[in-house]
Amino acid sequence: MNHFDQIINRKGSSSVKWDGVQKVFGVEDALPMWVADMDFAAAPEIIQALKEVVDHGVYGYTTIPASTTEAICGWMEKRHGWKIDSSWLLFNSGVVPSLALAVEILTEKGDAVLLQSPVYAPFFSMIKNNGRKIANCPLTIGDDQFEINFDQLEKTIQTENVKLFFLCNPHNPGGRVWSEQELIQIAEICKRNEVIIVSDEIHSDLIAPPHKHIPIASLKKDYEEFVITLIAPTKTFNLAGLQASSIIVPNKTIRTKLSNGQLRQGFFTLNMMGITAMEVAYKYGESWLDECIHYIRGNVEYVKDFLQREFPSIQMFDPQGGYLIWINCRELGYSDQELNERLLQKGKLALEPGTKYGKGGEGFVRMNVACPRSTVEEGMKRFKLALQ
Image (tube, rainbow, N blue to C red; front, side, top):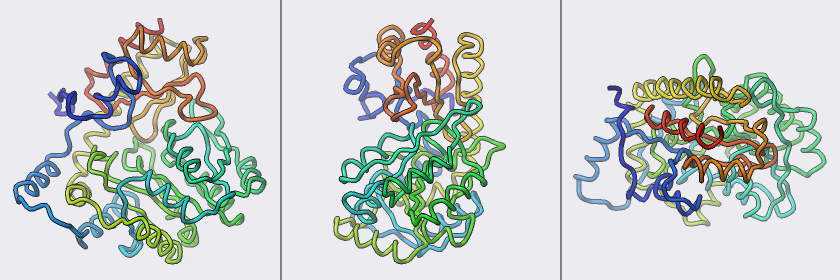
C-alpha cells in the first residue's frame, strides 16, 4: 500500500478541516474536502527532526539560524531556478499576515489594492480590514482555465488609484500556473504604473508536470525592485499548523519598511518547531514531495474521469499547480444556495462554495484532493448522491 493511502484520524486533534465542519457548515457528519491542508503525514525526516526538538526538553527563545536561510535559498535555486540572497529574507507566521503587513506598510488610506477574482478569500479581507479599497479585475474563463484581460488590468490600475497588486501564482482556487509571457505582461504593466506586486506563491512547489512555476521576480533583474514574493513550506509539506513562512524582498528600501513594520507589531521570530520543520523540509523533503505530487495527480485524474462519466455537463479546471480542483456546476441549474444545501444535506460533503472567492465564483465549488484515494472515492460518491 502506498503510504499516502494511509487513513489518519484527525478528528479530536483541533483540526480546522475536520473538527470545524459543524461550526463552518452547520452539519457534523459531512466529509471535509474544503480547507487547504493535506490529510497526509509529513515527511519522515521532518517528523524525526521535530521529535528531537521535543526530546531536548528545553523550549526557550529561539533565533532563526543561518542554516535555515541557506536551506530556503538552496531550495529556491534548485526547485525554481531563482538565485536569491539570504539578506532578502524576512519571516512571518504565514502568508496572510504578510499580505496584511504589505497593505499596512506600503499603502495609505484611500489607496486601492488590486486583485483578480475569483481568488483566495483573505485577499479581500486583508484589504478591507486595513481600510483600503479593493480594485478588482476579474479573470475570464478560457479553455477550462482562467485567463487575464490585460487591457482591463491596466485600465483598472490607472482609474482606481492602485498602489499594490495581490498576484496569486499558482492561482487559488483555479490552479492556474501563469506562463512566462503572462507574468512579463503583468510585471510590465505594474512597472510603468509604479505598482508594487505582492506575489503569493505558496502553492508554487506543487506543480503538475509538464507545467513549471516561474517566480515573477526572477524574470528580469529590474522586477526584483518592485516585487515581494511570499513563500512557505506549509502547503508543500503539510506544515500549516507550525506557522512558518518567508518574505523575499530584494529591494532594500521596501524590505526595511516591512521589517520596521514588524518591529512596531512586536514580531520577534518564528516558533522553534516551525524553524526546524522549514529547514528540514527544504533540505530533505524533495523526494517525499515528488511522490506526493504524483499521488495527487492520480486523485485529480480520478475526479476528472468520474465527472466525465457521471456529469458530462460539469466543467472541471484541471489544476496545473496545487491540489485544489475548481468545479463548474452552473450547467446543473442550481442556485448557489441550492447547490451547497444539496452537497451538505443530501451528500454530506463539505466543499468550499465558489461565492467565497468573489465575483466569478458563482456556481462553482472547490474540492481539496490532498487526501487518501479512498477519501476521494467516497467524496465523489457523495457528490453524485447530492447532485444526480
